[in-house]
Image (cartoon, rainbow, N blue to C red; front, side):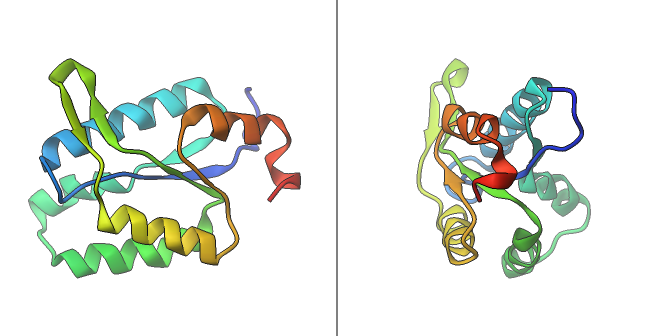
Length: 129
């Protein structure tokens, strides 16, 4: 898909539970895959990890920021952080679960795997919200 008309998809995955660097690595890897596939415009909120290394902020500031931005996006992709090459997996995330709750409250779709997300896109995402 070469069109710039793509849904904006927020990636919700663990950050503070487990290893924050591994969790960030995972989200950057998923972002790269989604961007390369060219079907959605991915949003990787864990990029704030890098902002935080230079200008640290309280955790609640990052949650408030993310929550304020969520209404701008078309869908949520909720994934566990899994890096098989490192035998790493992190499933629990109160932050990602809270983001899912917000998407549900907004009546926006939440997907738990890339294939389901891409199926929604293929069906004409703008018409099936």
